[in-house]
Length: 334
Ligand code: NAD
Ligand code: TDX
Image (cartoon, rainbow, N blue to C red; front, side):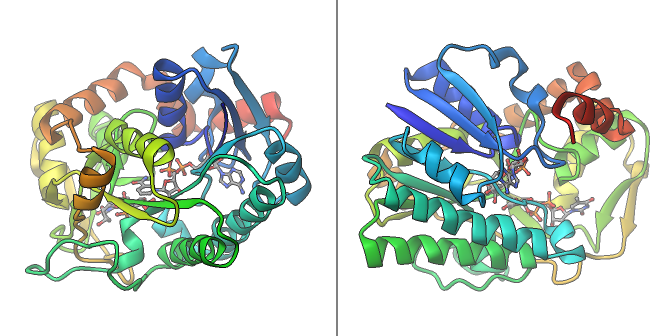
């Protein structure tokens, strides 16, 4: 069986490809545009693996998507613009990749009559924001996205639903809460706070720091995507979450504690516009139908993540110094 993984040079996609090559005998094609967030270093050790092939390109390139799709059975679509703050500054790349790109992949999947399944990787943010006493999000909750990022993801989810309803395409949508772990680009809360702590720089906490996220270790999410691909019911949506709600200040406190640093590094800054207050996921359906559950506790996950950033200083120093961008231009001609 051959799988197309899109966005496989990003944070979750690279962890997913690692999991696939380690635990399955599928062949993998990784289609990635290598945007600022796509880093070939994430899969350096697997570059010459006999069951792995990298193709640089954009998912919204219909002729490229069409030719790759002829070769594959299933698709797992991670490729996306993924950062809320960037979407607030400029929404158009989010529409191009997340909406147009997903639709191009769906069309190519349909035209090639692929035998497998199309897994679309989405997010808890499509449901909007919870109040303090609301129950966690369920799959049949309304879509009420608040940021341009989440609006683009909700839109791509709806195109996936339409492909299932209109053409009977075997599409499975997964929606996951906030991931953390190795290889996460240091614009997101946890890697940013770890790196700033290691560099003794201020830790910018938005607003009052009381916003709640449901944290999940990236390997647990990747196992969920794999289960959705292998056992998911066509047309189904599966929520994944870490059953681990934490306020941002608690998360930052845990990182500082692990590093033995003082909370004086915390600096409260202007809030994110439209900042969602709370996310939490009810993953009961995935547990029941896919036999999935999160396995890594927040304590273990944070220890492993902090240790990874300490041990892989060169990986993130390159990114934050801009040297990575030079390297990237030389290697990949952009
Ligand atoms: P990321 O930003 O780290 O990686 C995205 C990858 O997609 C990069 O390698 C980038 O080069 C590639 N890409 C971007 N535009 C492309 C295009 N037009 N064509 C081909 N490749 C392109 O993102 P991530 O955090 O790994 O997220 C992966 C997916 O999971 C996204 O769809 C995101 O919405 C979803 N998700 C993320 C989280 C999270 O906490 N990070 C939670 C739930 C869902
Ligand atoms: O510097 C910061 N300070 C801060 O207080 C950053 C970068 C974030 N925050 C806050 C904002 C959020 O309440 O931390 C929380 C987490 O922020 P992000 O890491 O930007 O994640 P979030 O906005 O919750 O979105 C993430 O989870 C769902 C991913 O980026 C999405 O791709 C995913 O879909």
